Image 1 (cartoon, rainbow, N blue to C red):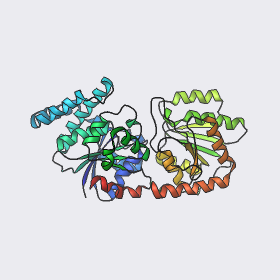
Image 2: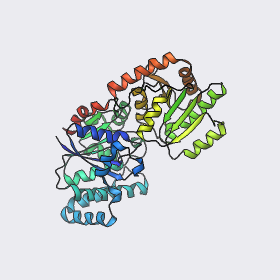
Image 3: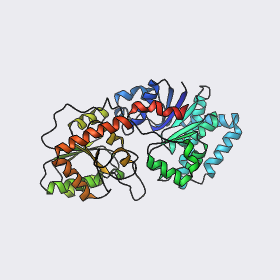
Image 4: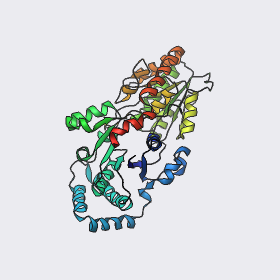
Length: 402
């Protein structure tokens, strides 16, 4: 089997569990994989199952400045033409927004130089970056130094929000993975049909055996659960407004939101202004086992994702997949790749994004119709087991690595 170097932002991470799961399932299939992370997570944010990856990953932010600087001097001597050519790319690249991104690109260039000193004699067959900007930039530079092919996975916002040298990456990489038809159509339209041959859709997958329907007795009071980073694109503010409508109508229910993020204060203020004390609870960040336990107790799962004014958006949320695997009926929105996961009125209910009244009505349907919850929950698990199963990953990645 081939020797692959994986590069990611933060590895492992509670917010991108699909990355370390993907790596593990590929290792189990026989691939030799080494891992690089741009930043090291806190140990408290690492799930026990990901500890082996945490302990063996090279974390670039832990490498001293002078060690990185020495690697640049070494490269300038050993590979002067390549070094100068790539340094020119850093300062001449046009597909970049502002000096801050230029500095980030320079830092990625320096990081790639250090990785070359680390992996130049290891016999790597291919580099795989799990996100478009930072990881794929490092992969591009390192690929040039090592003279091995690279590929990368495009998930969500990076192709819509200030992509860094995306055109160059698309033309120089061996393969492109994206997680949805939505992303694929966007790339083909913007960058040309010639990408078709190297562009492949591989859905993020989950372990459907790990996320099995719970035998735990559901609460007598309906329990709406939502999981995600507290950022604008998750649409939690609309969930709060929908809960206020349901409360006003006299429904008895509990809504819990799991996650943390930059919009924590905004959401807390909205919570207070709507008077949702005793109805909605923010649980903060939780590890995977804790999330799975909450899913087992939930009645409905809701993720009202939106496209922000700046263009920020989801890919296909893994949190939705996990809920569906647990046979939960889901309520979400008709945005980006979500309709590829949830067919409206078959595996769940989809409403227009940012439409609070429609969101409340969809939740109300599930609150009042137990048979429909069971029917759509069963269909939801069936869909995820077939099309979003991590067991499919090794076969799908053959076309990327072989």
